[in-house]
Image 1 (cartoon, rainbow, N blue to C red):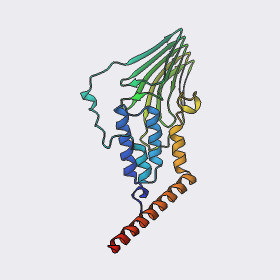
Image 2 (tube, rainbow, N blue to C red; image 1 turned 90 degrees about the vertical axis):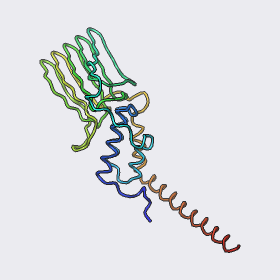
Image 3 (cartoon, rainbow, N blue to C red; image 1 turned 90 degrees about the horizontal axis):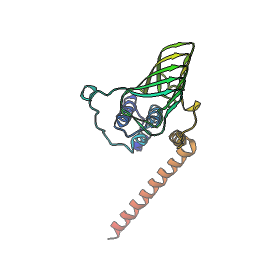
Image 4 (spheres, helix red, strand yellow; image 1 turned 60 degrees about the vertical axis):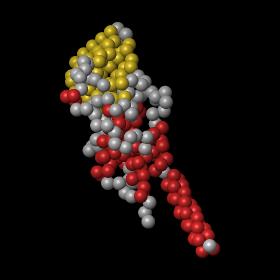
Length: 239
């Protein structure tokens, strides 16, 4: 009999797990980098056991977020650097639209460890003879628009393949003799606590050695159950 965990996953089951992850993120249970990594893993999962691994530390259902109209309107949160530097990194909460203004200075927004409580991260970035740098996890979808006059606006992010329901970061960039850049993990300094831990764990799970170990453990478990069953039958006949 096939182990239930080894049953092949369907596209609908993968999408259901991705939606569960999205809801968990809005509830504040996952950071943006955790959401991105687990979403990527969900789309590459082949069995029920692999999908279960991605949600084993999350509630089974997850509360449904209130519709946008039911939430109080929140003003845009601004980060401003005028002839100086402003940086926001580490653990923080994003529950509203963001704004970054750099005037002969620098603004850095690192979204990787942020708890994103919205369906999409929306940022307006203005650079006048300065630099705005936004760091995101590789694998998110970045939508960059706006204009650049004697300056640059650019994306340097390893995005996921088309068709995946991955987190979205939308940036409206306006650069005048300055730069607005969106860069991914591979182009930024590593996080203080390794952001690659989940991906490494996932690679190990899919490795041949890991699969062989799993087969051996399942085989030993079946043998043990057969032996215990035989012992119980023998005891029954003895009486």
